[in-house]
Length: 259
Length: 289
Image (cartoon, rainbow over all chains, first blue to last red; front, side, top):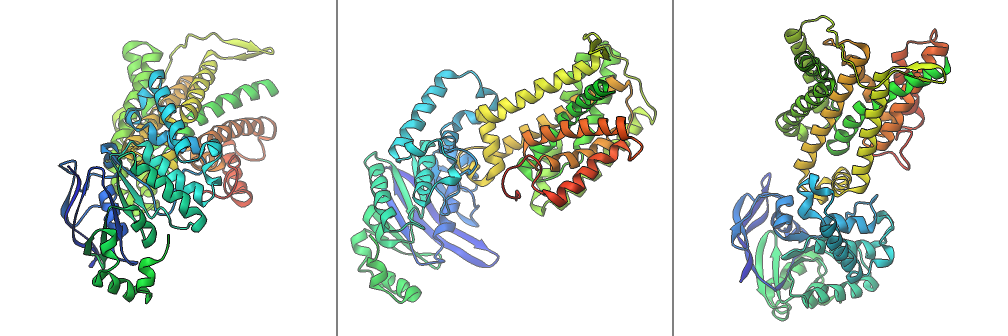
């Protein structure tokens, strides 16, 4: 079953077309990566799917219903959990509070329900504890989120997104800012999510990292989709190699670098 | 002179805290200074005295004043502030001064320019503290303030609603991605902020037995000084700053009142703070953005 369907989506900013008629579909349980050189429109496309940007044209359907322009709060309530490219923790809250916040969203909608629901509170706390364990943050749970290092922040981003119990997990460059030492455990964490049949859409600048994780890859260049297929096929595709060559002059090197 | 000043200072500080807290909550989320909040203080007093004349009950008057003012706050934010937020912080500030002036003129037209008496009797007895009489209404003010402020501290620190508030104040975009509806948080914020100002207005007008159109003038500008002292958008710092200003004002007026007028003290403190510690007295770390 198709969970996410992006149909001829276009986003323009004052004459600049950041995303140009892109269509793609993500099936339930699938892991799709969107890659492309700098300025290809990856992050713009991602923000439209997450609801924080309104498309200029085209439609997005999530679980069959049109959702373009609904806004980020509504999208997260519908089951789209996202991480941010530049880690954005609530720095003055503890790591646990950061996760708890996302885990409690169902009854945050009604603030008067904040009191007296002990049963649900326990359920939420159990889920928070589980997520902290899964993402390896247990030891840091009661630290201020602002004190985490880059690897910890990346994990917190994922823990928060998972706390929303998303049907679709959107990962926005989760490896950004990490060295080789940080990338390997992160890849393992993301792989373990796969085994839970989570549907994932990953936007990544780090090509090797993305290709090692996904089932299918979509390549954007200058706002247009130039390739869609398996990670094996993408390494041999002429247009893709040209797009990366144009950017970095590294060609095959850029395509095979990383993991 | 010490004990009466202490009691008066705490009473004034309680009133300031009720008013400044609402303003501080609004600043925390929207980053705007809402001068019109003091219009809710006067509105609460007028609705309160009107309802009191109809029912003879001080607490129905209090609840009615808070409810009407809360509605005003909700309507103002939804149809007035939120649409102009994108234009930066200065335009909402100027607009709020305009709203405040318009509200005062409306009160003058509807209720007349004269002082209206508010002769409510509160159910608390006049007592003596160390031989000094404390009026029942002063006790009520302190009691209401303590209940409201402890309640706010609890809600902000210990409930999911408070967690949502703190998260939205810190980064509204991320909070939305976590499923928190920033519009709702904003709406609740204004309901609460305007209700608190109205409660202060009703209590003050019972205390002084007077309601008049311009009674919000002094609080409107003094509250701005207080929330800067407390560290903008820091609710607990705001409460502390309110008590501090209430006490300092009263003691200066009592002991060295010939030096400067009482209502100028908050602004002298504001100037000193802006020079010495611009992040506010009660905020740790660097200057807030």
